[in-house]
Image (cartoon, one colour):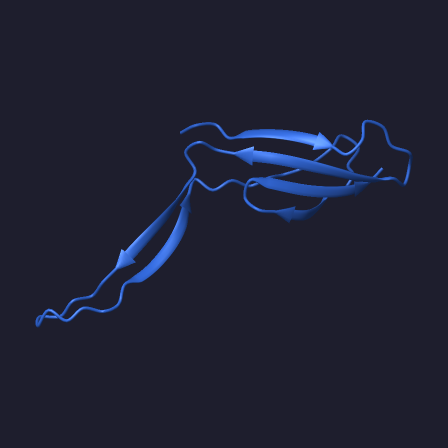
Length: 89
């Protein structure tokens, strides 16, 4: 399995106390992939059901954010490849 990749950027390089900090994390994994399973049921006369589909993700990713001051980072959004977090300086 491939190792996940991540890049992180902050919206500024310096902050005053009380400033809002925005962290953007772009992430991915070369071997994470969606999987779709399709099921069709057929009886002895050859009658078939409509296809039923279910999806899953193999090797899903999670993002965890922590800094060395113990600050709480709140997730604002995450679309599966880019996550945005906010904290107060």
